[in-house]
Amino acid sequence: MDPHLLRTYVTVARLASFSEAARELGYTQSAVSQHIAALEQDLGAPLLTRRPVLPTAAGERLLEHAGPLLLRLEAARADVVRIASAPEHGLTLAVTPTALGPRVLAALPAAGVTLRTLARDEIPAAVATGAADLGLVDGLAAPSDPLRLPDVAPLTTRGVGEEPVCVLLPANHPFARRPGLRLTDLVDARWLDAPGAGLPLDRLRTASGTGGVRTALRYEGTDLRTLTTLAAAGHGLTVLPRGFAADVPGAVAVPLVAPRLVHRTEIVHGGTPGGAAAALVRELTGAEQLWMPHATGRAALDALM
Image 1 (cartoon, rainbow, N blue to C red):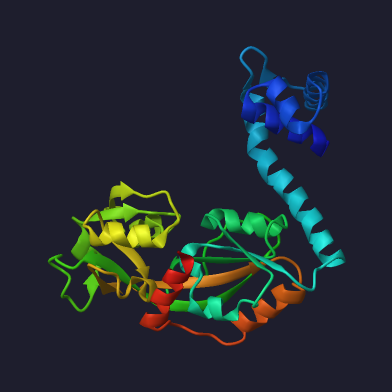
Image 2: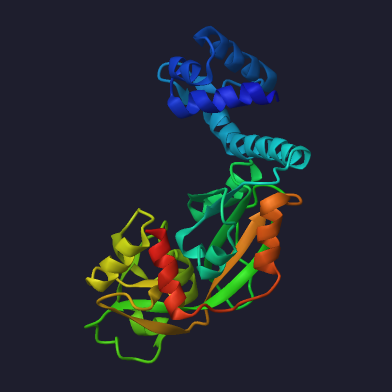
């Protein structure tokens, strides 16, 4: 299949309009219609109904394949360009908020860095397509277990570090004075679901074995201070790396002792990094650090604000 035709089809299906797709792609509406007709002729099946513009059953199946196919093409182009013209200076780093710990902050070049905060699942694609030189992803995992990342292209992931995790509770919570908490202690708890700022709840649900981690409030931002303020105010519990959970006003960080989970951070890159990207990879993977001091963890949180 011609990738230009495939890209046109995906755009029409997404916008549900030939004219809107033509405007976005910079084609005439007639050209868009010709692209769709050529693709339908190539595949021997109608892909779209015209009024309204909706995918047929065959078109829906093609959409399932089209996203990964187009992403792989973009990744291949970015990989070749990266090898051919790797910049010596400048670095674009895609991160999640809780991946940007003090060790990473200390290793960043003094100038020429662009930080992009993205969702965890978006970072591998950003690196694969060249939108970022490197990615830093994090999540909950059993000690020494790798993170489960989307398979979008041939990428290299390396562990940067692991750190204990804590449950962030309001200071007046009945469990606030406990030395440690088991997830089974919290079966009736209300949780904050904040996939863009904290650690995702789905891993906790899997670890609990019961699916009993109930969401009380969903926060769709990326501001860690907002998340910790919501937890301190009693709107729900959250699990954070120990360095980010310590010293939150009005809240107490109690270690999660069972199941055994850690906050794991990994660096993601494609091909062989060069320049500033290579230097950062060497700095972060040359020596393993398994936990961060509390005070510097709060300093990292302040640096994000």
